[in-house]
Amino acid sequence: MTRKTLIIVRHPPHGSSWAREGIEVVLVGGALGVPVDVLFDGDGIFCLLQGQEAGALGQKGTLPMLKAFPMYDIDTVLVSRPALEARGLKADALAIDGDVVEPRDCLAHYHSILTF
Amino acid sequence: MNYTLVVYGAPYSTQASHSALRLAEALPAQGHRVTTVFFYHDGVHNGSSLMQPPQDEPHLLTRWRALHADQQCELLVCVAAAVKRGIHDASEATRHGHEAHALEAPFELTGVGQLLVASQHSDRTVTFAP
Image 1 (spheres, each protein chain N blue to C red):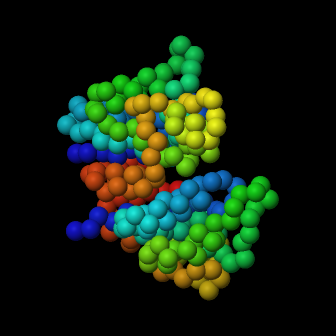
Image 2 (image 1 turned 60 degrees about the vertical axis):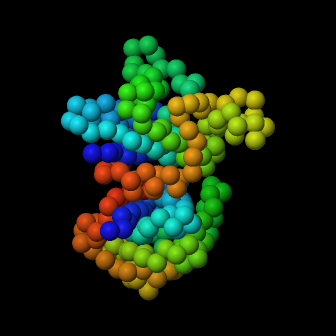
């Protein structure tokens, strides 16, 4: 059985390096052929909104990294339904395609989970 | 069981390093061991051999080294997260033109891919965040 890792991004794209350093783990997993899926939950779903640019602090934007997911063979992007609903967001507001899910139904499928 | 511990918290700033060490040190008594400790995010500062806590506080660097000696675990530090925070080993320091370096064996600079590999090969992965 393939041991799959889930990366959960819970932080927004600006204000800290959490989201960037988490998304980097996703891309590295893809580049190395290690099976990883990614879940955006909590404020992490703000990473998925369209029209983001570099922040005032000179941090690079994270959206180009997300758009590179298909190139890195990251096929499964999960988006938390409760997180969307709590913030009044609809899936069609998101800049990349994802599967809207209940996080609690997904976690047991993974050998390990890394949270950012 | 084999454990991978992931440390995101900086030493002396949050409880993360202390808690990770306490779990790691307690595992052998239960028949388990740590195979890898991976330092990422602000956790890379745990690898600084220049840390000098007051004498009446736990010396985290000494305890990481003892953990490595006791359980032969890897102490892996993400190179990208470390170098941008000023935690170089001798070869990275030379490569970037710095005269000083902070990271020495048994800590090793490595790519974040090693975190995924270690986690895949471990029975359990436990994260210690700030």
